Length: 202
Image (cartoon, one colour):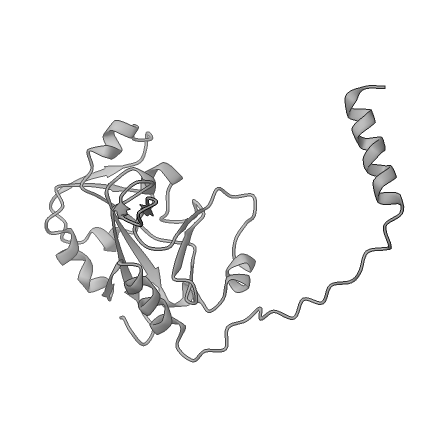
């Protein structure tokens, strides 16, 4: 008998006397019922120290001071209207050194969760690969109002569980044992959200 066989046999013996599994009721909310999820999202994002802008018309001003901008290959042309800096499309894939030299990255998202202030990317349209949003120090992310859901269970129904996902709740930050906040450790130090549509943007 191998060690694996012995371990599995012991597990079967230990579990043999257990009562049959109990059906656990799961009555947690699956759909948000608050009236303005976009407003809730803005509140959570600002609490996380992200900066929120309203309307696609705010993009030219945001990009005015950006010399080198990384973007997914399928970034909508309208997002770059009036931009005079260098656009670096991620095709062929930019190297980590290239990404580190960028002033900012501009992407869209898959879905945003109002209750937790979480922006989720899944490498879908206008999002690019994970490294694109994890290496540059500044991430500008366009979020449409129809991508905002109230609760996490709603967001999960819109995601492909097989896709590589990045979940963002504010700028990258961590704290040491003294609770000193350090930003930009695991990803962008600056997160800026451009909300498009809904009651808070156009």
